[in-house]
Amino acid sequence: MARKKKSKESESKTVTLKKANFILIAPEAKKVSLAGNFNGWDVNAHPLKKNSKGTWQTKLELTPGKYEYRFLVDGKWENDPNCNSLSPNPFGGENCILTLLDVVVT
Image (cartoon, rainbow, N blue to C red; front, side, top):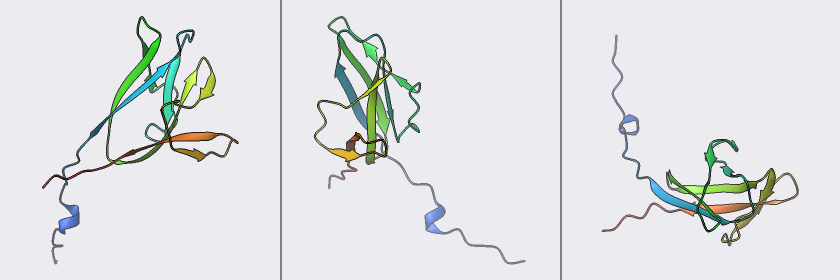
């Protein structure tokens, strides 16, 4: 029986995670969560924490790539006011776009 040779593609690659900081200023909000294609749009996966000044925040480590996301604020979808790149979604609104680059310094 012939053995298959291991291909270079099957060898494990080191993946560099990038830090992404999500911030929303919403002092009157009771509950804020983050959903996007990085978590299957699960509104329970990434709740944000509120500080004493009314700023909600969470930090994620993601692989380099392009991500769409939105905030769910007290049951209502809202975009990130700090996001400059938007993409139409199938519900008549727009999703925020976050692009994390894999930068190699030589």
